[in-house]
Image (cartoon, rainbow, N blue to C red; front, side, top):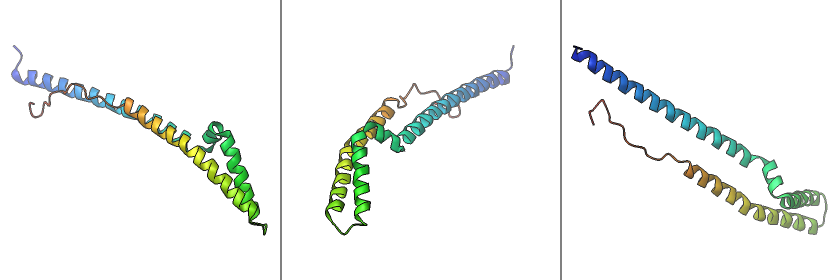
Amino acid sequence: MPSRLRVVDADLMEAKRRLRARSARLRRRIDRRVTILRHERTRLAAWQTYVRRFPLGAMAAALGLGMTFSAGLSPRRLPRWLGTSLVGAAISAMRQGVWRDVMKLWENAESRGVEPGPREPDHTTGR
């Protein structure tokens, strides 16, 4: 006949094993999400992303910046005005695309959210 102490020890060891397994699953899930978010953050912060997605906007912005800076050397105001207008138009056109990217990332993160699973009993309090 097993002693009561050994049965309690076995139950406690099993509870510890389940808790460690659950903690390991949660750590792996969090690690995957952090890795995905780091990749998305890097992609969204890279200028190459926006040049690929908005090639005309990037060209217009580059042309506008070039005109604006070169107008600093010129006494005429028209090239400066034209350059700043081009930059402003390019940025406002790209802003909508960037906003869509951020919203898509947010929606994807929410869809991969943690669904509350069945609650495991708390063996320390008996609930």
